[in-house]
Length: 275
Image 1: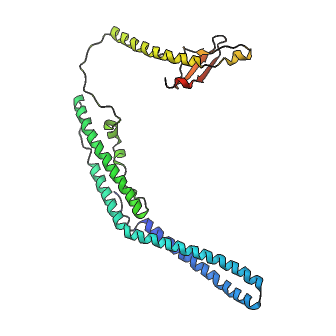
Image 2 (image 1 turned 135 degrees about the vertical axis):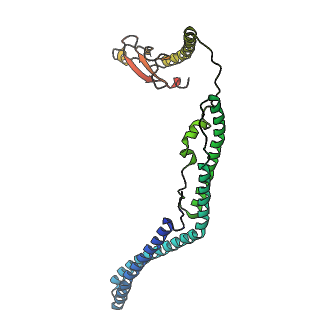
């Protein structure tokens, strides 16, 4: 629940600032009074140097006093705006709170075990999720209106979507839709192995094209170069995953080996990152 701001810290801070400005102004005026008398005496005595020095001090104090007067007018203007807009801001907060309470009642569904029921539940949850998004958007807009009215953050309620983040994990727009169970069909071990091999062979064929790109851009062996022998590095196919031989965990970065001296190197080949 949100608290009302009619007697908010914001108004109190403005009032305190106004008192502070008045105190500083009074202090400056008290400092100016004896200086004015001293300058009058210096002028009567014909002490020009002292008179000029005192005049500079008085001018500096006068400028500080004028700055404080501007500050006082600015604070008073803010207080007037706050007094005028505070009731409207309170109504905005009430609307936001009402929406928040409405949002709290959106999620009320008992769990069911059967997959076809989950399909129906997700479909309904997507509608609820959309309503929660709308309420969050309205509350956010009210927060902006509150800030515009009184120049103060409303510190509104938590996001409904964040409060029920589990709903987003079940019914968010980026979540794959639950599908009804397909009819079960028996697959023998031999058929399963054949299918897996077919999929692996397909991946390896695609990966082979990337290996050729990597080797075309591979550097020369630095070890052989020291002996003034030019040897091109090749992809170390024994490294990496079984379906991505030679490639590191970072896509586009390859394990290389020298076919002549056996030296190894890991090198990024940018042209293979998007293939």
